[in-house]
Amino acid sequence: MADLIRARANARLPPEVNRIIYVKNLPFKITAEEMYDIFGKYGAIRQIRMGNTPATVGKAFVIYEDIYDAKNAVDHLSGFNVCGRYIIVLYHQPGRMSKKQVDMKKKEENLAALKKKYGV
Image 1 (cartoon, one colour):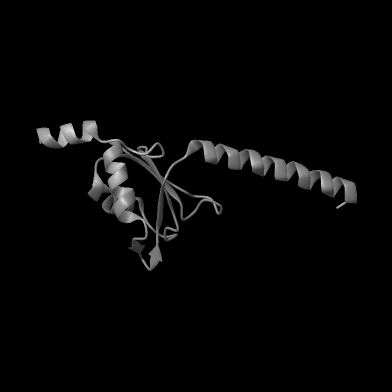
Image 2 (cartoon, rainbow, N blue to C red; image 1 turned 135 degrees about the vertical axis):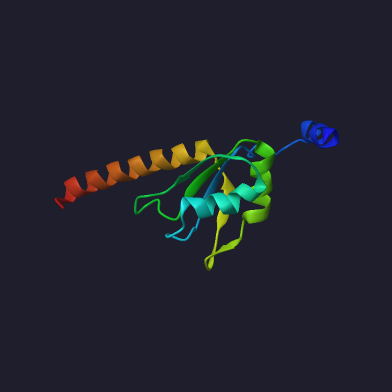
């Protein structure tokens, strides 16, 4: 056990690795219990947040207690078949998420301006 702790302390992880993973292409009918069964095999989970709107259904965030457990889950579960769907498991990147929201706001503003210009 002490060797494992020492190995983890000396391991260098890529900068994108963190405790929060983003899961896409989940079956729409998957339950929280099933999510805990699938992702809990790789370590202690702090929280699972599942999408509940039409735009976010089939997506979830899984937050692990330990960064190494999250890395292990991403390494093993990306491409895993759940109810006939191959799930996509990525590290959460807050910078990319906020950029997408800003881009979406710009697109909405441009669309509103075009609608006003052409009287739609």
